[in-house]
Amino acid sequence: MSTPRIVVVGAGHAGFHTALFLRSVRWAGEVVLVDGQTGLPYQRPPLSKEFLAGKQELDDGHFRPQSFYRSQDIQLVGGVRVDAIDADARELQLDGGPTIEYDELVLATGSRPRVLPIPGSQLGGVLTLATATDAATLRSRLAGAEHLVVLGGGFIGLETAAIAVTAGKQVTVFEAADRLMARAVTEPMSRYFERVHRSQGVEIVLSSAVTAIEGDRTGVRAVVTADGRQHRADLVVMGVGSVPNDTLAAEAGIAVDHGIVVDPELRTSVAHISAIGDCARFRTRYAIDQPTVRLESVQNATDQGRFLAGRIAGAGGKAFDAVPWFWTEQLGRKLQIAGLTSGADRIEQVETGADHFSVFCYRGDALIGCESVNAPRDHMRARKELAQAHSAMAGS
Image (cartoon, rainbow, N blue to C red; front, top):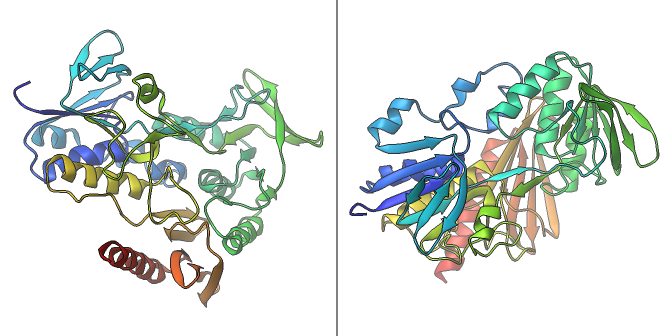
């Protein structure tokens, strides 16, 4: 190829923003965005929030209109699956036979919902929430449901529960751990959101294992827990975590470890191939007690897309080092998290009102993260402090 070509596989937040930032830094080569879904690339967060609540339609969530891709000379190849990577030939084998050559390949393949391996998990009334199609199906089915059961008390599960109970549905959340959002937040924050959900009528069952789902091809009737009890349900949503889409990489000989392993510059183990977003596993100084992490975060995907575009265009830094941050909104409470709070040995809670407070998390004397409810100033202050502290460490 006379003109260098970047091919990005996956048009979610990571893939789209890689293409966007390549053009914003005036990279002049070809940009090809390949995705298995049809239609324009779209944002995921509204699917479990505004769209599910009926306050937004799918078209409202498009990153950009069709005219943007034409004006920016970004080639969209939608509704096409990548079957294989030939790293030696620098070529992608597409579903149906065609191939695409690349000079640099970016894997932004994301992740998919984990499905519990229990009887009944494939019944028609058991849904997951990851794509626009999933969200449209859930919204339609939820309208006619009376009793929703949510498996998993993480962000997606609780956001779904919040929308459903607000719509007048009976909602039960089953969580295998002894508290909600246990992998993401401190115990005080878990207990706070448990109280909020219970106060709105959500039934929460902690430390509970669901062993089966009963029903038929048309729908579900109940979920069964390890104690043998049957719990009524006419719709079940699984929100029990995700699995990285790393099979394509693994089959190409790229190193994977519950995600595609990348170096500080987001390069994989194979030359001319990078990986970003939910599918990538990387080292970060913000993780105190983990050697590597895989972050499922819109902001991480966007930040990595920006970094990678700069690196490809020769305008980036030497290592990806953005402060991780996350957010969720449930029942009128917006939770924002700066940093990674796992590994804290001391916390301080600062309250400015009944539903306005922050939990500052420390390791020794060093701030490692902050969880804020309806307290955006605390969140922004923590992000700034974390960035400054790590910049000072990097420069020392």
